[in-house]
Image (cartoon, rainbow, N blue to C red; front, side, top):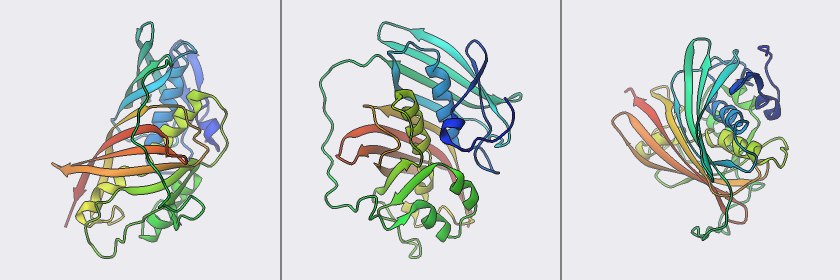
Length: 285
């Protein structure tokens, strides 16, 4: 694989396989900066999915971001087949660039089966739809003086902020942050591809919000944050190229870390995925 940059999500998750259980993902879409964590999530999921039977799909993942990735370099994914049972398969994936390990994730795959179904009902009668959301996430964050606009513009993400916080008042914001989210390009019906795309979406904004309960903007030059780990549970299939409500809540901050949880809902209120992310957060007065 060359270092040629992909231009679409489909190209981003197309992997070479130089040997058994070893896969290589292309360089990042972004022109500079550190590798987007959602890319590691999506590419590792596609690598692991190639090593399981076709009747098994990702139901959970637990990932650690170990080192900043180089956007100009491809990433190698080494898949370890931890276990294959009658209903579940577990894989460990180590991502590296050169001799540096940059990312590691454990994934569990499950054969779909019938069971007792329950999820708290969620309605959106009181929310603006994606076509009526007041601003895009990109417009909002760069309206606050953030840099890296070009990196955001090339990512195949469409995020519409429902309730952008007023960051000029320096008041604590503790309500859930709501966005409509989808991939900007059409994807196939492949369940592995849509799960990878959903994981890619999930890493877009979670860490940003840990500063809000303190009345701070993540775009403030005194703020520093980076993702430490990311967990995700997939409850039912969903199309990542169709609008999903991305509801994000800050659970706690302290000790230099912040934890955010989030849920993805379809427009009809079905819960399709839950995720949690902890990040390093530092504030310098």
